[in-house]
Amino acid sequence: MFVGIDLGTSGVKAVLLDRDGTLRASATAPLTLSQPHPRWSEQDPEQWWQATRAAMDQLILQAVQHGLAPAAIEAIGLTGQMHGATLLDAQGQVLRPAILWNDGRSEAECAELERVAAFRAITGNLAMPGFTAPKLLWLRRHEPELFGRIDKVLLPKDYLRYRLSGDFVSDPSDAAGTLWLDVGRRAWSPAMLAACGLDQAQMPGLAEGSRVTGYLRGDLARRWSMGEVAIAAGGGDNAAGAVGMGVVRPGQAMLSLGTSGVFFAVSDGFHALPQQAVHSFCHALPDTWHLMSVMLNAASCLDVAARWGGYDGVGRMLEAAQAAPMQAQRPWFLPYLSGERTPHNDVHAAGLFYGLTPGTRREDMVHAVLEGVGLGLLDGIEAVRAAGVDTGPVSVIGGGTRSTYWLQMLADILGRPLQLHSGGDVGPALGAARLARMAVDGDEDPAAACPPPPLLQVLQPHMDRHQDYLARRQPVFRELYARLKGLRRDDPAVDGRGHAA
Image 1: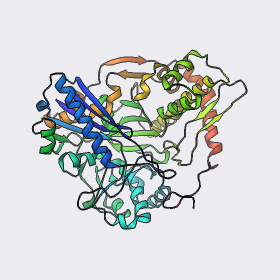
Image 2: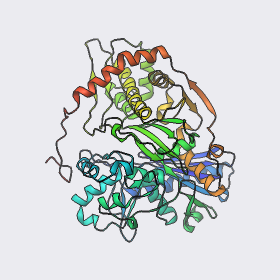
Image 3: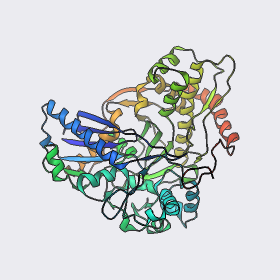
Image 4: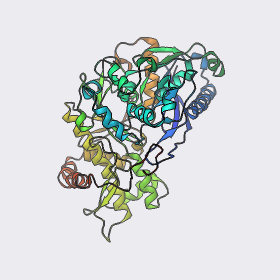
């Protein structure tokens, strides 16, 4: 059997997979987010570790209750939120709370990185505040004493690896999101590290996602009644989610509807289109790359809309919207509640309702939110296509898959079939468990080792509706952003501690 651990932003999920590929158990433990200043987002790595232990305790208990022997577990795979800066001193102690993927404080440092010679050619990406490198530049400028004590910089899932096995290792899919990786070569870039005042000794080693990086500590093996358990390198959450859905060959694609919205397409080699904020990263499998478009607010917009509308949760809100006829004169919604990545790379972009009238119902505003997220996703998919990668049907994962009403709307907006598979709600953890199996089995054919899970449903687009979206809704959606760009919300310049300058 194999365990997959997924360190998310809101919780840690652990799953147990048997050798037949069947999901036998799953457990979660919650996490909290700290936002001490405007545009800051942090978490305590110790909380990650305590949540991981709690999730694993639950998982082992479930296994035993189902008659499964923990001693039969062969390997653990890791995945999790990308880009987080986790800083250790020479004694392996955490120096400060980790700065997360959705932190926006390092806008000025991004401009500094963009001036590094051959920056985009090396990284394949734009410099964005969410990535790891600008966070370290910010720390060097605003917390210099702490910066001088940094012995290791780890990504979130790799901090869990350190606690599980004592090893400092990452993988190319996660490392590609730091801006320190030469993405085409799948190796750390000395030039990019030097630009941040760092060197390779402060980085973890690199191993492909389906390789063993170490073994579970003896005290933890005894705690969970395990034997010798290998730890696989794993991958960033989106790459691992793609592995879980069998998205491993060029032309295959996945859409993740979580807090953020991610379109993930496997490419035939290393491609890049940084000027449209397309992410060009390594996949979690050897000699494989992918492109991603990322919008910062996807299913999270639904949570906010339910609160705005006074609904008792997102489910009730969607039921009400489905029962209300969609009006032709409904409003538009820009989903940029905390800025945007693809295709705008605009930390100052803000959310907006446009076209309200005295007759606007709250269900009309819900329709606008659902469509606004879909139109934002369409912008990202079109940017990926402009980079030279196109796809057919798209596998869908994440919490947003619970509503077939919204999924059908998204299929119509995107103009392509959306495929629902079993296991989509645990996609990254499932992918991590698959990578763990590949690590101990030495599987060479990813397509054979990572088949798509059973297909539950295909939502076919209504092409007449798709054409109507292209003709009537998309142009206004894009014009609203274009006209408001540069008109900043009440978001004053902040000093090093997040206070108004």
